[in-house]
Length: 557
Image (cartoon, rainbow, N blue to C red; front, side, top):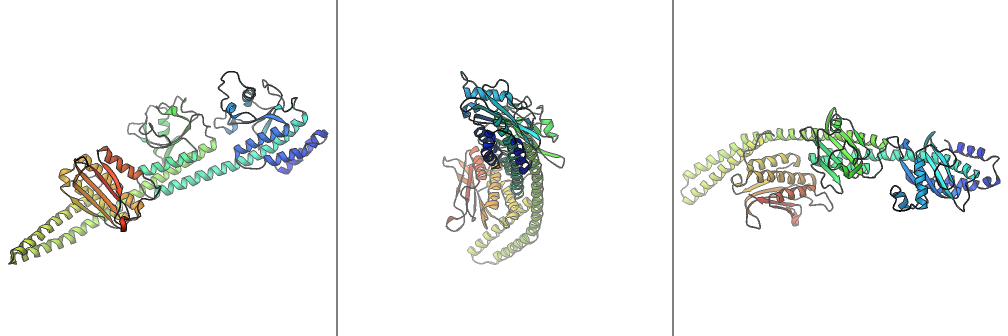
């Protein structure tokens, strides 16, 4: 309603009223001005309750926001009080001993709050009470209650008229605050979607991508946790990523195929839960930890990648219809970004394989042939040499060339292997990882093997070493901005307790570890080593004065 129309209506309502009422017009106008300031919805409701109590001289005020603002359409979406102690408001449903007078009034108003507020006294409320509906854009938003006239006595006709006029202005203020709040919410979710898309398309592995989605969803929804579930291969959904202050016990939890919500999620339909702790559809052991929840399929182009769960703590407010819509749009955008990121990684892998084929051809057709020709020349020179020391030295050079040719052939074999082919040995796998990393890095990291790595390093340790190498090279590419990387695999190392070990060293001349930066990759490296009885530490790099980063990962053979 236009403010001019409100003033006109207020003036028409005051015509013929008592001197008492007209004398309080300045107070009413000041109250209307106070109500109209500010745009945050909950603070607006607080201000309306306080202003109404001061205007009518009431000890208590309460605003019951009805189910129109609640997703279920039932019950109360909010209940704001003035003059009632916080402990009574928070514990209105738990009475220890005799209820206080404040709590008695509060409970009576709560019992009446869900019904339509007609002018007059609600039944069962002790003392004198005014009840006035608040309308927003023609619809009843909730009820304004005033109770406990200061100085005793009852509320008069003037009080009722003043509060009705104030309720009209309050409806306008609430409408403006609600529009502002919805607009601000949409902008936050849009910004969050942009941040997720940017993060996913900037590179990184699949687990990091899902972690970004979980973290952003938790922040935007003001939830207790952000959780990503993926199909477990047996028809259920497994929690694979958790963003929470207390993630203990969540990771690895499986939502079984017979869960009532799994089929709905896998069909691409969202599930909204008012209370996870009591909803019979939530049958996992972790469900009692949470209250209102949204379970949103990560769906793109008819393909369901997984599920995004955004649970709030027990007792928290339920998600509004606007929040549900915005979260569903965020999940759809996140799923699209995941698909695009996966396609981008596929293109990068294809480019790597094509480049590896070219490198393998060049090594075979050019480098090996030249080395072989050089070896023949040296052998001819060796036969003609007169001095025994010269023949011996030339022979050693020929042997070294033969070994180099063998290593290049091993590298060619590794480069020509497809992604699904099993590597021949640890040396080949290391060379393969370094060749793969060379394309995004823009240069070839150097590598040195110490000892018979293929013969000494066990399969389990070898798999973890390759994973550690991949993580270290990825960190160097994404964060270090290095121009030189050196890799050493030493199968003759020893642990501090004397056990034989293999040591992987990856050093670069980049920018080093940033203060306050993410350490998830380094933690993964340490966990891999510790699970085998080894360790992982970071030290100085190859730059001037020890600049850059050096990662030393070691584990028993």
